[in-house]
Amino acid sequence: MVTMREYVLATFCMSVLVFVAFFGAYNGTAWREPSVPALQPYNTTAGGNQKNFEGKTPKWENPDSFWEKTRSDPVAYFTYILAIFTTVLGSVSIIQIGFLIRSDRTARIAANAANLNAQAAIGAELPIISLSSISLLREQSGLAVNVVGYPGKESALRIDFKNFGRSPAELICTCIEWAVVDKLPSIPAYKTTSPWRPGIFIEPEKTIPTGPIMVKIILLDEEVTAISDETKFLWVFGYLSFRDSIKGKVHSYRFCTRWQAYAALEEGELSAIGFVHSGDTPSVYIEKG
Image (cartoon, rainbow, N blue to C red; front, side, top):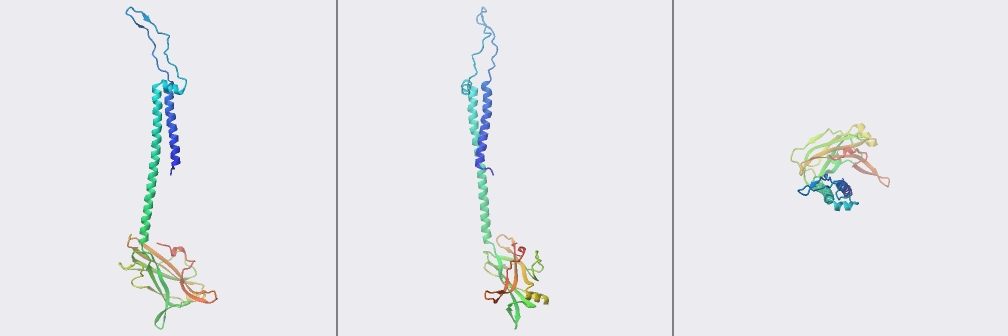
């Protein structure tokens, strides 16, 4: 963008150019000798007595200085005055254009700021969906209890989501996947999707109204052994898509966790943990959609 300093410089240059142009026009006018017609003899009396003015020159001399030219020639004087006023008028016009451009830029910046504030205000009211709880259950004496340590061949994943925003979120689709691998592939494979019937909302500060989602997990023998040896891990990932009630836009919350059976304490003892967020998780598994 052009700064005011550049505008002032442009104004000065334009003023100089205009002044020089008019000065040149004036200079040519002031130094141009008048065209004096040749003096012809004429009769002053009826008798024909004639007075011949041939050989005489008009009483006119080129002035010696700039100001003498101005005073001696009215055309040059008014040309000089016109040049001054034209220069001033051009300078004022250029300055006014500069102020108009600057005011337009200021108005545009203010409009953009107002738009950003409005978008921020709307964004503050949107629903915010996140994991509320996730655990691994196993059956014991006919009851479902939390898995402690390494999981067996059969277990059940219990997962729930909560709306931490200020407006309701209408549920659209859920996808929950699990895999036993050392590291996740760079691109997630979403295969198992479950659509929600229309009209199911998660209200602000509430969880899924129909209750937590349950997913059965059946491991192979080699997968159970790999998890116990910690050469591979049980990963759970997926997404929950929903529509906000303010803008009607569809959003997608992605999640990814890894089962960690134990963690070493300072005393050298082991403490049961569960699902954790791993630093080895590729960013595409948890990016906002």
